[in-house]
Length: 396
Ligand SMILES: NC(=O)c1ccc[n+]([C@@H]2O[C@H](COP(=O)([O-])OP(=O)(O)OC[C@H]3O[C@@H](n4cnc5c(N)ncnc54)[C@H](O)[C@@H]3O)[C@@H](O)[C@H]2O)c1
Image (tube, rainbow, N blue to C red):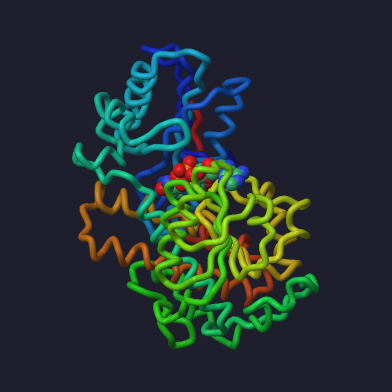
């Protein structure tokens, strides 16, 4: 079955560029997904990206408890092109869908570009704050990431009922704090709050996730950009021990400001810490990297951390707890849509961000109970929520 509901491929009337809008699913509501502007070897590579990324957005929205499905826009650019014309074309094509899909920023676009798209369609979010939009998404992404890190640390502290002996833990890791003893202590599936996204905080074995402490835990934050530096700051404020890195040497100032240990990217990646926090680019976790890791868990905002789905199995075999990135990084889109599309109150938005911890905890528990990876548990739960009908495929 063709899994996407709609795929529009147009030659932009103003720019002449290929404009691709893929709507994967509207089973849970209007499809959402950013607008990527990028050069590709061939426009079909852009189509492939749009199909893959829109499907991933469906999973992200479903697991974030959002009343939305997944979509994506790809503009296949050339070395020189008329940006305004291309953005107008994006708006024109999205308008054809009559609200089935709304777009926001992605690689190659930012909040200011959303204003240009808004000259052709109202189905756009994440406009600048001074233009009535929700503004920069990175503070909310950082808050959501820290909520996820609290859930991970609760498990490492044994505050959750999860308690497993990793099957193939590397000797170098065995002395790490929190390395031992994660197992499900008999919580029933009903006790897991997979659907509890609206709860202000999750509970782990009767204790609030918020009670779990980040203080004294060690983190390696790789990438100190918009999100990474905010995550590092929040962790430092909570009393965590930090190793940080960025390819940009100017970011060393952030390390000094936070009292963090500065490291090269390779040192940071393989630092002996409780949690590795990938906050730079995707594709970081590969079969070559996994044996060198010395962390107990990995949870960060970087998109597409695994080079391939099978790398989740390698992490699992090493006993490294991997938090699916599309759960961890959902804070930005959660806040943008809650504010701009659903006009929710700040308290409701905060509850949604904290709900990331609830969802992640439940995914870990399900994975443990079923003897599968968190990646597999997350994919299965997303699928269960989306429950696509089989007869909606339609390509134009
Ligand atoms: N900004 C958001 O709201 C948001 C939302 C969801 C996901 N994400 C993802 O989170 C990640 C970070 O986003 P951002 O907005 O902070 O991006 P950013 O571009 O502001 O920061 C990325 C940082 O990583 C550094 N970097 C790049 N390659 C590196 C390497 N090999 N080693 C070490 N550092 C490296 C860069 O110098 C930069 O400082 C990205 O993967 C992004 O897709 C961001």
